[in-house]
Image 1 (cartoon, rainbow, N blue to C red):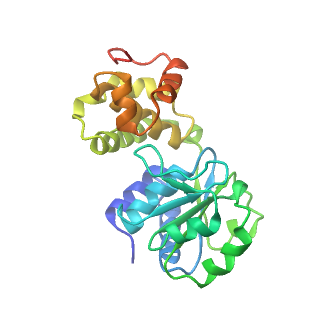
Image 2: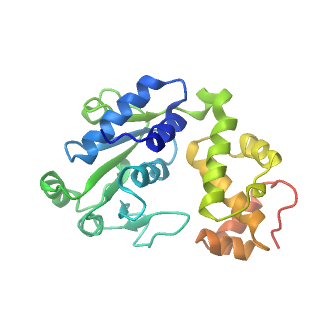
Length: 246
């Protein structure tokens, strides 16, 4: 059985700490995917690629390749902020050898028909489909059971714990001090950046970077993003106190 305590804990964070049946079903789907007996389908609202990436790291390890194939995002390397992307499905499949190939169902590459037979015969690439929404009538969302990530609106009582767990991960990722995420920061994320798990993950990582670094440019470099992009994100929000953006 592939399940580890780390993976089970993460699935509980995604699906709900009291929803043990959903966690057990998710573990079964993951076992099938790792054995190359089925694709892994993740459904829900918001951007699901960060969730797929997090699952990949816990399933296959952080050193194995995780390649997204999104023709709208160009050919980009991996960074702290986002995984590597390839426009071409064939190129993505080649780069994903020994790891995972992830696609957004709504943004399949133009050469996807060439990728399908190679995926079916491959025992070296785990295939992950991110599916926004929850169309129960579609075959991909029936068998094997998808991992359906519930809305954060349905988990209001659990969100403080969700934010804290993502903050702990951000602190570990950036080698920061525990004091780099405060109670005030948690309250800010809950009020301004908790519409999805991906938004919580992004906000906690950026807040920790901003608290750790002397200025916005240094924080952007640690996040692997352009200073102007971080500046725009800041400009749309009233950030918590004592964060330097100069």
